[in-house]
Amino acid sequence: MRGKLRSLLFVTALLLWIATPALAQETGTEPSAGSDVLADTENDLDISQIDQILRGEQEVLQGDMFSYDPAGRRDPFRSLMAGFEEDDGSIRARPPGLPGMLIEELTVEGVIETETGILAFVQGRDKFSYILRPGTKLFNGEVKEILLNRVVFRQQVNDPKQIKPYEEVVREIAD
Image 1 (spheres, rainbow, N blue to C red):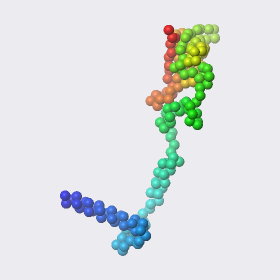
Image 2 (cartoon, rainbow, N blue to C red):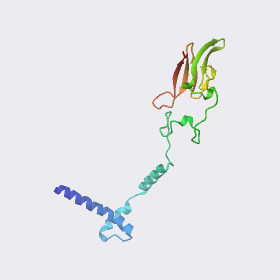
Image 3 (cartoon, rainbow, N blue to C red):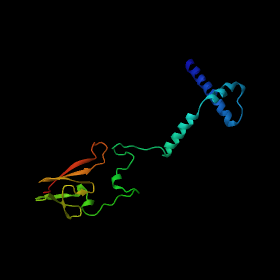
Image 4 (spheres, helix red, strand yellow):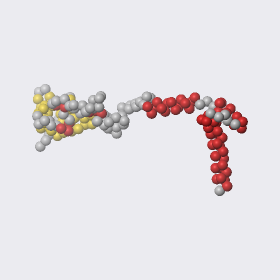
């Protein structure tokens, strides 16, 4: 108990010793003769680094200095809808026809092999039929490969847990 009381008295005396010059500056009074030692040590302290640190913190809080380098990863501070938004924040309108279709919205109806290569027939969300060739661009990916019973798509993915920015989606012929 006695040790705690001594510690408390010591801390109180230390705080008074530190606060005396600050109180004198706020009230505009001169410190007493006993605090001359405090005034001398205060003048010797270099507080320019403290001011610089505080200015840096204010700039960071205002957003002037912060920048994020994703290094190939998704920026966690951007919306997950970032791929579908325009610069002004509105959602990007899809182009008409096949370039505006998502891979999930296509139903593979059939595959045919021709002299020029293999083609796939798909039905879109608008209930129209379209012909796909390898390399055909869609809204969220492209056709990677067409096999006799399925179509392999390369879908763009915005998932930070995946190493590749795309994944392969296989759609088989609908029954």
